[in-house]
Length: 178
Length: 174
Image (tube, rainbow over all chains, first blue to last red):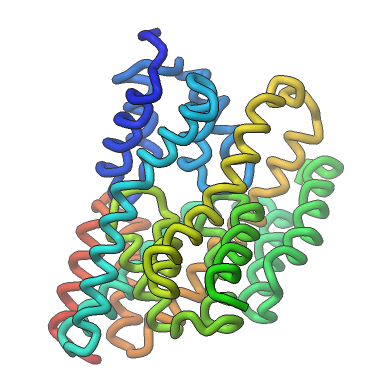
């Protein structure tokens, strides 16, 4: 293990991570945290990520808070989180300003329409990849389908949907191992 | 309700139910932004999602965009504090309690049980974003090709986004 990082190290590490993580930060996060800076061992990283995935919020956002808290308490959490989101925020706002400025130019409108169509394709691919481990487990597929239909077809709000489906799904997982 | 209060409430609430990563909250974010508060049109929401995907970093970068669109800089800060604050506080507290729960059977059951729900929510996001994005057949084909390439190949997502933007720029089929 290397020396424990200070508040500034946390900020700088996550700032670089935020800037470099195009299309998925997680693999890069592991490389930086475990291999390059050695803030955590591989096992510690996996355990901490497991906790972060289990909790609400973005996985990588939670991971920055968890690592920040672990090494430097509240200041560390703030430094890591702000470091992670500062640069991406600046970049999306610049992109948003370009979009707003040229919203009436047909070329730009068409370009953003193409960009949006491609982004939708990426999201479909992500859903397919996430669904793969469910294959051959009919009860889990059923929960995923019911959740999908509730949201897309019936436009149910998320919170009541979660409050009904999540406990049932957890109960099924515990009792039936499904 | 003033916009800033609404932004804080909407994103604060989403923050606490964002199980399985940020993309699972897109349908609910879409419902609030488009249907409940009319902050954006369907197409604007899809564009913001695309811009957020084109930027580096975590996948919740649509949040500052919506906040900024609604109420400028203060909207941006309020939306981000709402989205990232509550879940971060929960994470920091949970980290302290982590050791105690590690071996409990219910933790595994909850973790396993949340997986299909996350899959359903991401699929729902994909359906809603696709519907908002693809108003023409040419765009629907772009979506289908990107989905296929992203599933079957290891092409970097940025290339696929760039190709989609370039195709869009040509105006073909739009």
